Image 1 (cartoon, one colour):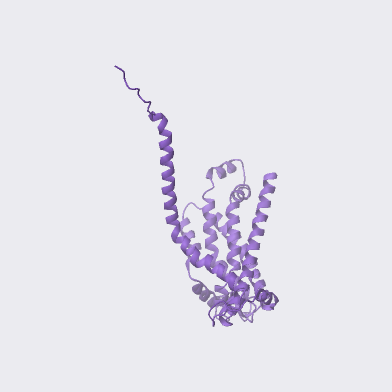
Image 2 (cartoon, helix red, strand yellow):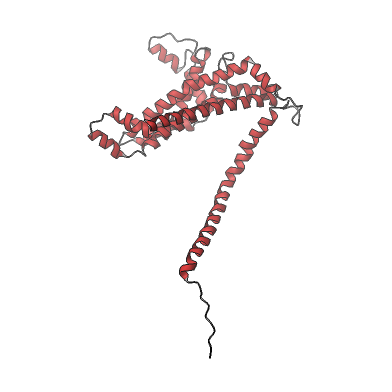
Length: 321
């Protein structure tokens, strides 16, 4: 009597890697679907309110599009760009925007760092300083503008009272002079937005191990030496982020200027976004306004790229040293 040959069956050890790979593949696919579902609401919002309008802005910049006519209008080519580049008020508004950026970026970075370092060294009451610095940031721009317009009111404002207390003669007001109006807007902006950079720096400081400061103190390092050798290098990425975000935010200034000075006196504080708004919705020329917006966008991108290249070159020099 013969017996049928028994076929060798793969052992569990042989099939286990295949089952693990199949499980991992299905798990990865499931996680991918879940990730896309979570990203879908923001993706739709991004397409509808950011990417879509940006593409439409670039398209309309080549047409004589108007708010009083439907459609794109007649093709203009680069005529809108040539007009904007040839207008003196475009260049003056761009200079005022850069001027405001120069006034606000250094103090917002330096003061936020200093206050964050001082707050981080406190063992008690940090919550109070976090609240005190960040509270103005959550207020709307209209509220901030009203507060500082009241402060800068000639003769009766708090600024005039401070000048009187110091023995100075109050002038016509900070916002009434072409030489000081932009400074007044910058002061209000620094007070308003300092809390955001402060929180970023404070979060970065709390990621630095305390043991580094303790070891430096044991070695006899002073507070300034600790900041110079430990704090500043380890907060390099945070500082880069803060500077970049602050430059971009300052180049997009509109609310404070519009509410506090409306571009005045004259056009001494008219910024790029205010010019774009006037061309687009007062002159009803969306095509020309889109061209000015594209030019401002190019300026912002170029400044951001230059800032990144400078930071990258500095990092390479430090590595080489």
